Length: 124
Image 1: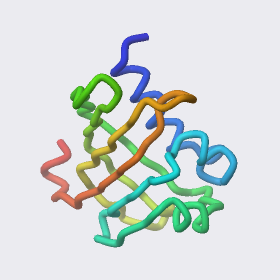
Image 2 (image 1 turned 180 degrees about the vertical axis):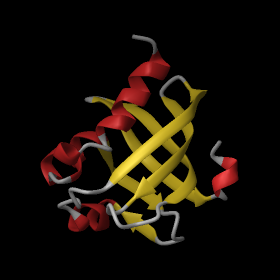
Image 3 (image 1 turned 60 degrees about the horizontal axis):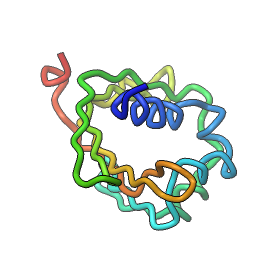
Image 4 (image 1 turned 120 degrees about the vertical axis):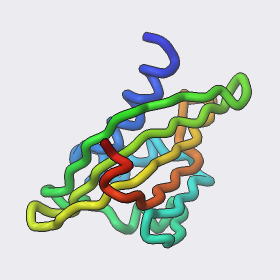
C-alpha cells in the first residue's frame, strides 16, 4: 500500500462509528497535541474531541478528491471534499477538509484537522 492509500485509510477509520464512539480507539489515531477547527469555526483540542464521544449512530460522510502532499519525511497533509449529515433528517453540509498527519513512534497520527464549508456546487 502506498503512502496516500495508507493515510486515506487512517482518515476513513475516523469516519467509522466503531472509532468515533470509542475514546480508546480515537487516541490510536489522534496525537496528544491534536487540534481541530471545525466547519462551524469552533476550535477543539484532543480533550474536547474525546468529551464529544460517543458519536451519533446516524452520522454519515461521503468523500471525494483526495490529495496528499508530503510536507517533510514524517509529515503529510491530506485534503478532500466531504458531504456530512449529522442525522438522517439533516440536509447535510458540504466542506473542504484538511488533515495533517505526523509519523510518530507508534505510526501515523493526526495532529490537525480543519473543515471549511463550501457551496454544494463546489462538491460536484
